Length: 193
Image (spheres, helix red, strand yellow):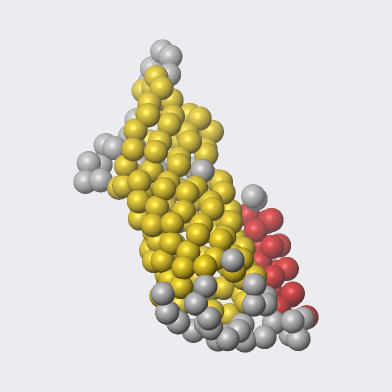
């Protein structure tokens, strides 16, 4: 999704919320399960872009806390890192998440979210200065995401949401590890089940 397209989506959500106040009412809280689908966009510290979908399932523990699990699939055609040329990068994070919602009885429900788990990585690499062939690599690492956002309560069943935060796909203390990381944004839809 291009930067301009994301801006248009956000403007559309804002205009929708202003133009249809009778549809958007404060929701009474009831414990429930949700399934969500989101689109992820990472702008890495190496100025490359990773994109892809994520599926989430979560459960409300009380009025503020929810926990869940999810799996994503992010890709990038090319990413330079630590003197290496990386191509055809595929990242599959499998994670648990905890979300703290500050107020659920509002049209806009702001929250903080933490996701952590494991990322399965698949890519091809070679030295930047090498004219040789790429080598295939499969590895795994610690996935983390810390961010904040807001839900837009459309009705009792549907929530649009948007969050932004910091993400790392292979967190470690070794600065030579391949770890796509940076600022990430997610836009999605949650459905009560």
